[in-house]
Length: 218
Image (tube, rainbow, N blue to C red; front, side, top):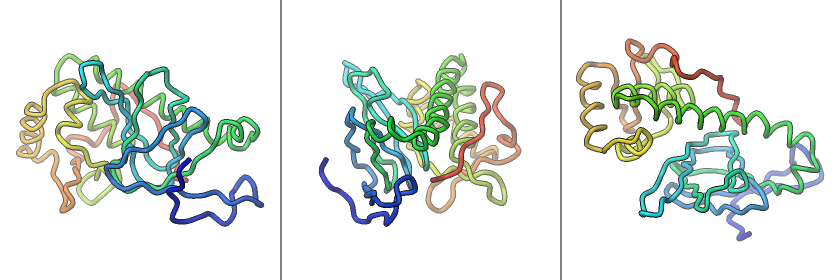
């Protein structure tokens, strides 16, 4: 694997005598995926997607700190990972995971979290009204990537209107229209960095489609 590290960890939490390299990728970069192992996120956000034969990209999900991803978990011919922010990752081979019960024990809850997110996205896609799909997606993002602020919940993940449209199977124009309406109603706003803030009046409850607790960061 090409070395992209700018720092090293002095001691690995599973092997005190080894050094594990951190791998850094800039926002917008494509992260290489190989079947021999998996990535774990220490910092940042990653978007997972596939490419359809017609050339369009399909969303598979998002990963945040402590979550893991890799092509070894997928049967898809095209599996992509792109950095939504500057990210810091650790690489683990399948051989060392299989040989370490501690590693396997750590990764199992994170894999479960990814599967639950995938199921939530499938449930959202089954909603008939686009307004309902968007509302449920925002609740999912709040649950997965939200941080409490004074007047609501700030989403640490920053998505374009096209990203949101792809996630709920609609057009960018439709997403722009609905988000604009929600903003006019005072149900959401944006901070100086253009991150969405979901107001408690409209998003101060859990989804009736899904519900799970995010794990702590690595």
